[in-house]
Each structure stands twice: as C-alpha cells, then as structure tokens.
View 1: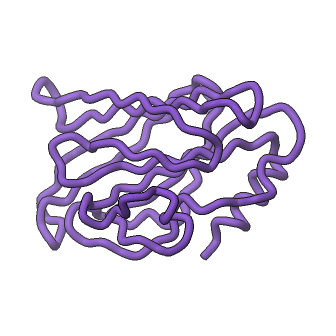
View 2: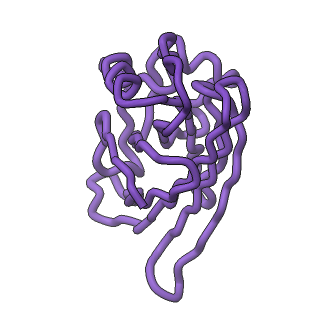
Length: 175
C-alpha cells in the first residue's frame, strides 16, 4: 500500500475549539489531461450548526471547523490516520479515533467518486466501528454523520492525473 499524507493545517485537538478554514473550494485547472492516478481527499469535521444548508456555500467563504486534513490515495488503497476527539476545552480528555479512508476513482472526470470512511472509536474490545460510504463528484463536497457526535464530516475529492496536478492543488489550497 503506497500513500502520502498531505496536511494543510491539522487543527490539533478537535472536539471543542473551532477555527475558520477554507474547505471544499474549487481548483479550476484540475485535473489536467491524462489518466487519473490518484485523488486528494480533504476531510473536515464541522459542527452541525456551523455547516451551511447548501454545501455549495462552502466554496464561497471560510467556515468554522474542528479539524481538517487531507490525504492522497491511489484507487482502492486504504489510508489510515488518527482522528482523536477532545472532550474538554483544554483537550485533557480525548476520545481515541482512527479513520480508514478508501477512495474508489472513476475512469473519467465526470463520473462519480466513491469514498468509504471507517471510523474506529475507542480502543481494544470496547471499540466501536462505523462505516460510511458516500458518492460525489470531483471537487464536490459531501457531508455525513460522525456518529455519536454533534459534528458532520465533510469529504471533498480532488482528482489528480500526476505530480503536476498535485503541485497545482497545493498552490490552489494555500490560504
């Protein structure tokens, strides 16, 4: 399994504090021509009350997020990352969480992108596992419940054909 974790500002401890961030905005020159080889998948944890009714509004202005990160994944190759949740304002109490994210890439840009997120909450025999499967299109955000939380996870895929696309994406995502 080959993968790269690209983090554009992980907001540390996530449960209580929020910070404005631009998520799900468009990068119009992506993907360039060529066979799709990977997807950058942006994940953001957003309190339900902070999420606009229309996800299209995410592209227009920053939104308060609890946590945001991104990863580059190849087709059907799971990527694991820690996604701990703070239970108090100082983050002295944490809920251990792990995400396993798998992207299912289309053959062409206009076709749907499938994303599967497995959330493992807790450790050992008392851990809970939730699986969310969503479908969206290139650069179109989709939201789903984070289970047992007052937050939603927003996932936005960006299809990339090669390293030049990845460099353009990094430049586009900079604040």
